[in-house]
Amino acid sequence: MKVGIKIKREVVFLAIMLVIALLSKAQSNLGFYHTHDQFNSSNFNPAFLTYQQKFTFSVFPLAGMSVGYNNQTIIKDMLKQFLTGTPTKEDFQVVFKSLLKRDLFYQRMEIPILIFGHNSDWGSFDFRIKEVEQIMGNFKGNFSGFLMNPAIKTLATNQRQAFPANAVYYREYSLGYGKEMIKNKLTIGFRAKFYFGKSNVFSDVQGGLEENNGHFLLKTYGPARLSAPINLVQNSDSLLSSGTMSDDFTVANYLFNSKNMGTGIDLGINYQITPQLGFSASITDLGKITWKHNISNLNFKGDYKFPLKFIDTSGAGFITKTPDFSTEKVNLNELFKITTDQTPYSTSLPTIFFTGLQYQINSGLNLGLVDRYISSKGLNQNSISLTASYKVSKKMEITSGYSIIGNSFTNMPLVILYTRNHSQSFIGTDNFLSFMFPTFSDFSGITFGTSFFLFQYSSKYKPQLEYLPYFKEKKPKSVGKKGLIYNNYPKN
Image 1 (tube, helix red, strand yellow):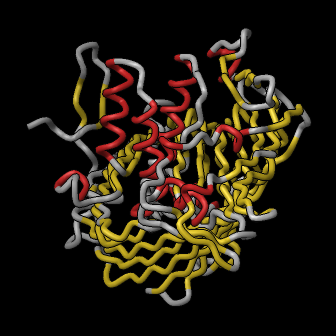
Image 2: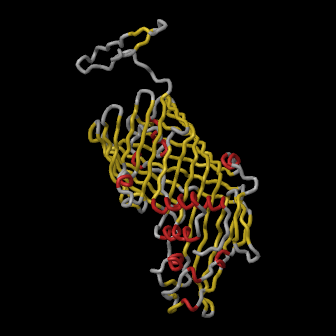
Image 3: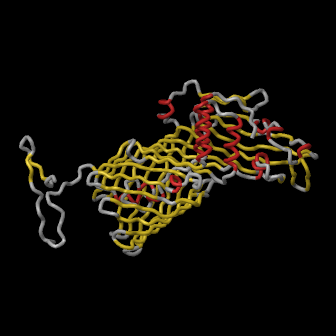
């Protein structure tokens, strides 16, 4: 869509980052849902805290990072354009047209800063600090398609298209608790969360076509709320004309902004129906953030008289555009007429519902089914994953299967969990096909991390022998350089 806005380099960079986020889908970890021993599993369900080690510790950058994206070719070209020179209007139009081809964009990236967990007779606790960035948006519809897609010829009058979007970046401090209520049967958990928002874009904007005395008006309505260190400039006609970074912007001020606060909770259960079959369910991110800092509310009140020369036919409640219509031949600036204010506002975080079933075939193999439903006004999304987990050894577990992630249907997860005496590492992807066939796969992502088990007990005995069930053999003693005695296996 032709906007006609001159933007400084800093804002261009922010726009590119927004485009990348809109085209991406992170949180590449559905394949790990039924790997309860994984130290980040309580992010899905706080009841899984009871599976953690007695003392668990991890810190950035090892605590678990994930990144994922789709539409790889366009992202690569956009980054190349930015690194070699400022992207052109045509570059942004290509990206925008690509966005219109998808029904829903969902991206969530979590970067844990600190994790500390402890199991005791009173229950299982953990404390977490993490950075969370999440974007949801949906720009596809008849109004945008009529203007941008040559294949869409007809537009109905008095039918509005919503342009919902919710982009948020915040720091989260949380305290989780899990407790086994019925031995080997029922476990419950909850997590209290405190949010400190850094930036937010929330859109309740709509667009539509109205008829007035034989003329057809394209109109925009509703607010787009912004909390970010950006100054927006309007011209004399109340049109959005430019944007710059705030004069007092610094990276430190942005990262440690504590003026936008919020609270939330997670709730979860884990129920063993039979010795082989287990059921789990949880609700996460049930909360909201109140935005009071760097506020810019944009109230859209645009209207543009659609040229009659581009109307081929019109009837009762619709128009059909001529074949030679294009956005290059019209000026849609009037659609971006706005009024602004700085009124604080609140936004609910997209709430995530998980439900899972796990069937233990034998001690080394289990099957899992998990459904993830994300609830947000106008931006609901559902994903489902069927996996099989196999214990290759006492230390290594591998999981693979098939997933439907939103509107992406060609996803095969592959995750590896490796647990040692004093630490645990994991690496995985919800779609390893993207690494083998990049042009075939719509989604790509990878996640990895390491945790350390503090104060682990060190046994004085060798592993128990099956044919000697009542005999424990002590590890042989070895003498160190300074006469210190160690209990270790003899070195080969």
